[in-house]
Structure formats: structure tokens, C-alpha cells
Length: 75
Image (cartoon, rainbow, N blue to C red; front, top):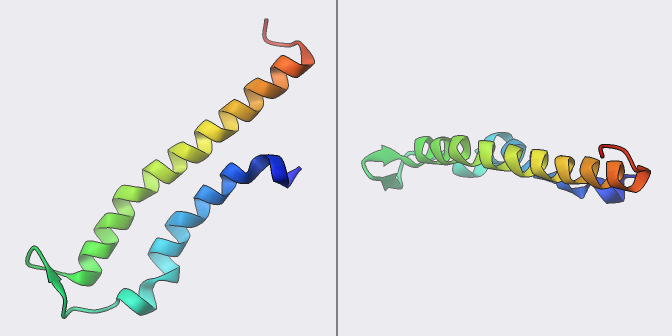
């Protein structure tokens, strides 16, 4: 069952970006565009999160469409 739902692993991306990497990116010293590195990292994670959720939704939609076709429903 889980092997067919590998697209759900995309939901780990925001978790890793927001929580898993914090001990390594919690710095002020590298400044990017005048902003502390941690702020830039958080901003980047915020931008990437909707993309990861969209990829998960898209994979789930494909899986459901394939299941409906195999059962002969949705026609």
C-alpha cells in the first residue's frame, strides 16, 4: 500500500526545512541580501512548502484517477 503512495514523502520536505535543519542554519553571520541567514532560510522554506504540498496533491490525484479507471468508475 505505502509503496504506491511514495508521493506522500514530499510532505517531509517542509518538516525538514523548518524543524530538522534549524540547528544547522540558526546563524546570523552569513548575511544574504542584508538579511540574516536564518531569516533567508525560513523565507525559502515558506516558498518551497506550497510546491511540496502541490506535488503531494498531484500524486494523490493521479493515484485516485488510476484507481477509478481500473474499477471502471468515473465514466
